[in-house]
Amino acid sequence: RTYISKASDSIVSLLDSDKTENGITVTSSGFYGPQGRQLRLKNRTGHINDLLSSFQSDSYRITNFEMESSALFSLGRALGHECGTICLGIANRPNKEFSSGYKDAMKELILYVLDRV
Image (tube, rainbow, N blue to C red; front, side, top):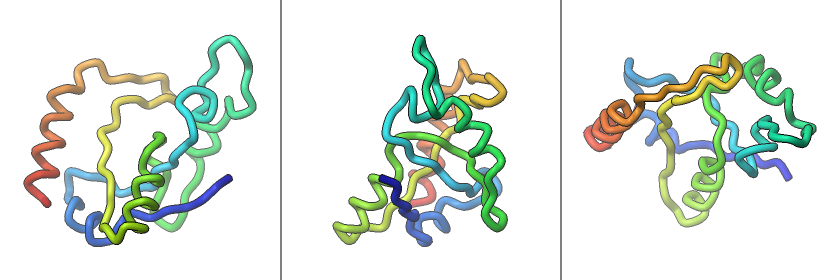
C-alpha cells in the first residue's frame, strides 16, 4: 500500500537555511529489497534508485530514501503534532559513494537542529 505524508511547513521553515537542501524523502517498507539492494536473490525493485533519481516535482527532487519519515509524519499528525525530519546524507547509492567519517557531521547536524528549534 502506498501513501503520502507531508512534513509540517512550520518545521521545514524552522530548519531551512543555506546549510540545508529541501527535497522529497521516499519512505520504504524495508531496508534491503524495497530500497533496491540485492544480496543473493534478485528482486523486482533493483532499478528503483534510477527511477527515483530521475523524478522531480516542481523544484523538488528526491533527496533521501529511508524507512521512518512518513510513518512519523502520519502518526504525529494524527496526534496533533507538527513533524519534520532532517537527514544527513551518508550514502549516494546510485554512484556507490559512502561516507566513512560522518560522526562529526552528525554531531554538527544535531547542534544545528537544536539551535533552530
